[in-house]
Length: 60
Image (cartoon, rainbow, N blue to C red; front, side):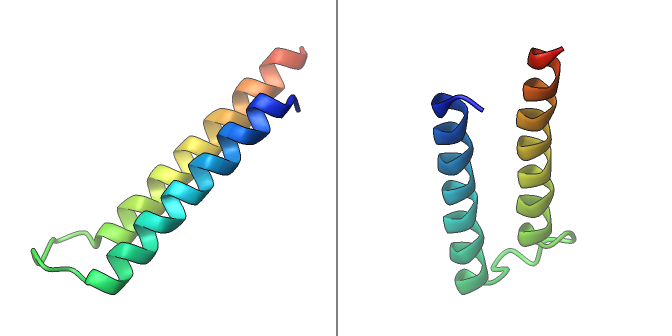
């Protein structure tokens, strides 16, 4: 991978990690039906998957 892709992926991972830690410390103050950590995890999977998908299609 190019350095720019690595930087974006690392920054995205750090931002998602900080949001997840913040949400875990804060808890679920609004009593959401779906816990926010689950939503953040799904968004992280979507973001990481899109980076991998873009990398695979760029090579072919």
